Image 1: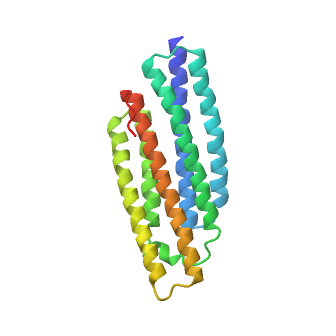
Image 2: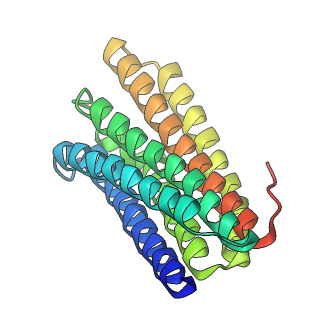
Image 3: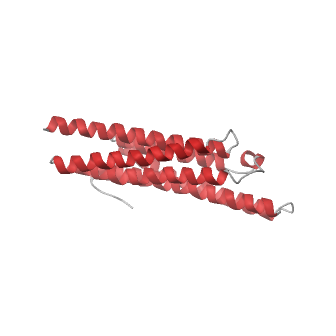
Length: 217
């Protein structure tokens, strides 16, 4: 019985890795679309649907583990943490889709993205957080989880920089209605990246709980 339970726990790890990889893909596709490297919005939406399906699959697996087996305290923490984590990962997929949707309205000022804004840095930072948060769960590595939690300050600082950069653009003498719309769109995108960082932090905190039994908010 225990061998079967361990096999199911290993399957849970594998499925979480796959869901995490899908989240990384969704962020990557959204970022590439934003930076004008091509239109990957369709890939974002497709990946988001796959993330939704993966959430349902993992949820069903967790329910079977809880109902059909008799997990000890540590196993119970691992399964319950997974249930919390997939909720955050599902939201990451949704926010990547939101970014892609906004990108469809951004028709000009692409050069500003690299020259005057820190959006690319935010995208790279949040992707790093998502990757490491899942890695910390799979490796049961408390140090990696703590690094993710601390790194959220970096994303928050980048969000602040983007806000200040957009304010400067709006305050320039050349700002017009089109520039105003661009700045609003970019602020919303930056906020979605900031939220993705928050979700990665949540995942890392649940990793802490699965290892230590203590959940810090």
